[in-house]
Length: 303
Ligand code: CP
Image (tube, rainbow, N blue to C red; front, top):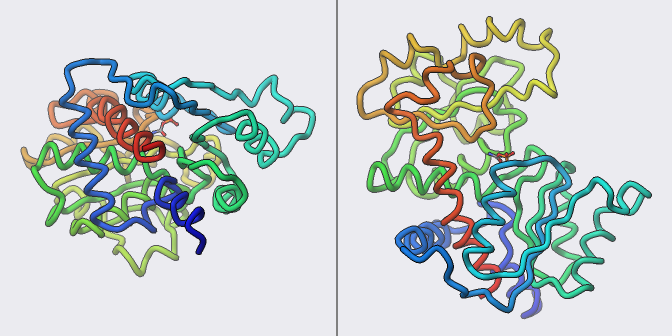
């Protein structure tokens, strides 16, 4: 590997499967540093230009990256697929290379096709940060999840984490699995057969919903209703009763258990309305923690 490509690799963040435990810990520690800063604006990246390129919709990831970049004083350009030359048939690769040619120092990118991000990373010379690629990885989501757990429990090692729902289509489940196991947590999955990912069975067991509730962290995943017709999971009410974090299930959780969800949330499908704001829920805390994590990751890309 050339010096250039190895340096680029160190600055890019394509996924957590390829990161070592010490690299993950170092990002979590740096996020903690940024979290403790009282000043909202620290212009550490004042002369840097970052492009946020979202080829798929987003609220949390897009805005928290922009918040993080602006808090670090970077110049931020947001690419919107609508009204761009994508509509004239320009490829994602040509779009990214165009922005790079204009002088961007790093790119944050979300896209659907699995494998394309790796291909892009090999063909551009600026660091790329994965903001979610298909069902492959969502590294900054998992980092903010781990950060939330670490802040609450003190350490990740030894934690029991249940991930419940649409494992098959979930990049959040995959990134959490890789990172949590590297840091010594035990991961279990719960899902109806249609939502199981057979290739992950070698890494984490599937357990019943009742067993899943006996963990330190109960992480609910969004049912990707836009991908599924009701026929696949029966009705959403049937899903809620069989796999949802209902008020009844939440009431039986041990007091130390933390409830998480990456959001967006389907209230009263995978989690009951009242449970979102439950005293044991850290869902909105996860969203807050997205900013220091993305500050750490953006700084890493541009340092
Ligand atoms: N959790 C998450 O990735 O949310 P967005 O799709 O809104 O970015």
